[in-house]
Picture 1 (cartoon, rainbow, N blue to C red):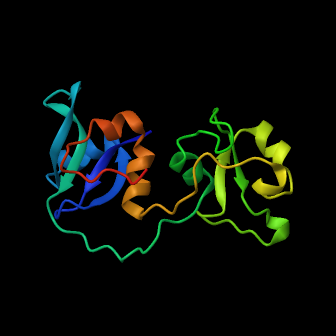
Picture 2: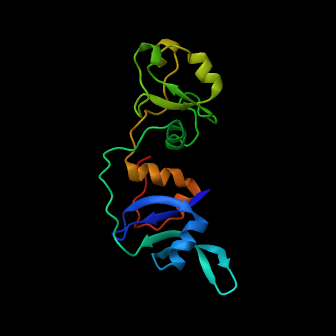
Length: 168
């Protein structure tokens, strides 16, 4: 499970890593802990450190500019917080607003999270044709927003205020 946010030396979000990888980076003096889990500690024979929630790299890492977050089914479910865009229940599938058979593609603005029941009921129609209005419009998250959304609601709420919050 990826639950530690990695910041560049300039405090920009870079990625998320496992707790074990974060501890290794801190122990190798490649990163410093910016925020720790309040009650978790990592203990070893000669080590006792707080479990990191947010770490910052000591050296700046140049990252190629990314204009947009890459689309994925998992990304759509995370963006919509696993809530159906038609009824608000728990979503398990991804639905195309404009069906692929009618030219709709796998894009952030054409896909929404959906429960299997509503996905089946809408079938090969647009929401207007099916009489199923969207509860919220799909949007394209920035790469940083997509990363913060992937952390999960509880982890994002526990992040420091100075770290930018996701758009949705």
